[in-house]
Amino acid sequence: MNEATKPNSILDTLLNHHDFKEGALWQRRHYEPNTTVFSEGDRGRDVYLIVKGTVRVQGSVDLDAKRQIRPGFSDLGEGEVFGELALFDNHPRSASVSTVTACDLIAIDGDQLMQFLDTHPDLGYPLFKALILILVGRLRQADRKIFGLFAWGLKARGIDKYL
Image 1 (cartoon, rainbow, N blue to C red):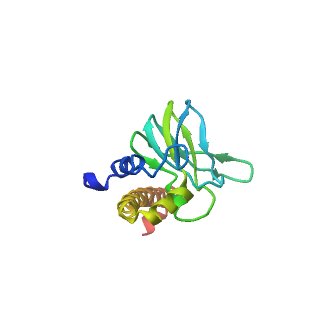
Image 2 (tube, rainbow, N blue to C red; image 1 turned 120 degrees about the horizontal axis):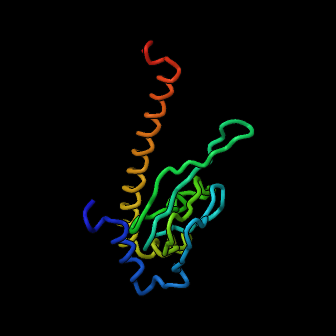
Image 3 (cartoon, rainbow, N blue to C red; image 1 turned 90 degrees about the vertical axis):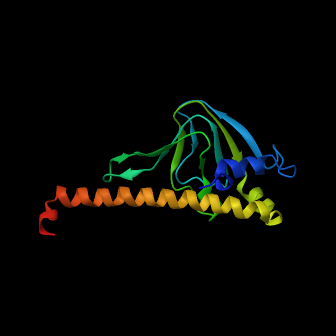
C-alpha cells in the first residue's frame, strides 16, 4: 500500500477538508482502559480512527447452551480503522470493540460520511480503495485462522490420519 492509499493518510485529508466539519460530521472521543466502544449486535454507523492507544476486537462464541466466551480476535493501534463494515451495510455490529489502553479516537458519522463522499468522489475513491484493502487483509487473516482451527479439529478427532 503506497502512502496515498494508506487509510490514515486519506482520513487525514478528509478530516482536514474545509467542508468536513468537526462536531457535525466527526468528533474526537477519549476512552479510558477497559471501556466498551460498541458491542456486537449494536446498531451504529460510526467509523473509528485510532489516534492514540489500543483497542481489542472481540466476538462471542457459544460453547454450549450455558457457556459463552469472548475471545479477542485482534488488537488494533494508532492509525488503524475499525467499524468500517457499517459503511457497507445496515446490519448490526459483527463484533465488540473495547479499549485495552486509554484511547483517543475519531468517530466519523457513517451516514454523513457517505453523503459527503457522494459530493466529493475525488476523496471517496481513494478512501474506499484503502478500506477495501483493509477488509481484504482482515479476510485473509480470518481465513488463516479458520484453516488453522479446521486442521486442529481434524487432528484432535484423529481424522487427519485418514486423509
